[in-house]
Each structure stands twice: as C-alpha cells, then as structure tokens.
Length: 134
Image (cartoon, rainbow, N blue to C red; front, side, top):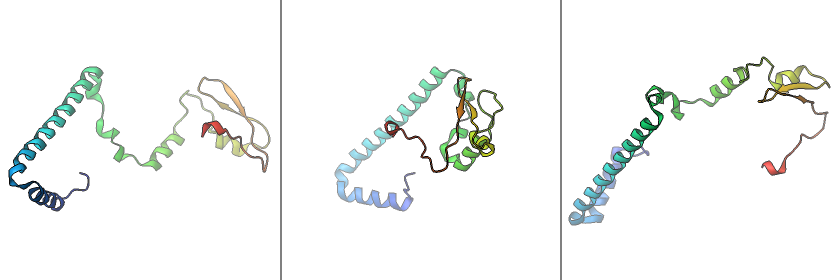
C-alpha cells in the first residue's frame, strides 16, 4: 500500500512520537482511528448504495475481472482486432481491405449500418488533418 513497508511505518511512528510528544500523541492517535472508521463507513455506504441502485446485478458482476491491474495492453489490442464488428457484418478491417486495393475505392461499414467509400491516398499525398480535433 503506497510503497510503505514495516520499516518505513516504524520510522514514521518514531518521528511522530518525537514531534508530537507524549502529551499530544494519544489525542492524535484517536483522531487517526476516527478518520479510519469514517473512511471505512463511507466505503461501506457507497457499496450498499451501489448494491441498492444496481439491484441483483451488482452481485453478479465479476469484480476481479474488471481490475485494471490484470489488463495486458497487447491482449486488449489483439482481442479488439480479432473480434468481428459489432453490427454482425463480415466485412474485413480497413487495413486488410486496403492491402488488396489498388486505386479502386473500398467501402467500409459505419455504425449506422451505412457504407462509406474509402479511397487510398496517392503516393506522397498528405492525409487529411483536422486542426480543431487536437
């Protein structure tokens, strides 16, 4: 947790004893305990609220699967490239379709089910650039 080892916590505790002194240390220790209890109560309240708003689906979610530490960027990209398009269409990805195209236009499926022509760039032609998009 935050890179704190037992040794570092011990040094922080010793520094707290010297800086606060024996008179004020019990007061600040009770304040720390109160803060921990408050944070734990807030976390439990958020979990209960989420469970009440989501209903029974909350318990069905596999939370360990959604842990961002388990994601491998290479696997995500590979899965995204290998998955079929969302519309159930069997069209090739643009790059694969473009590889076999010469100067003819290739049509690409858009989310609304419409088709838009894609014309490959000529040799040395600069791709379109939208200055407002950056």
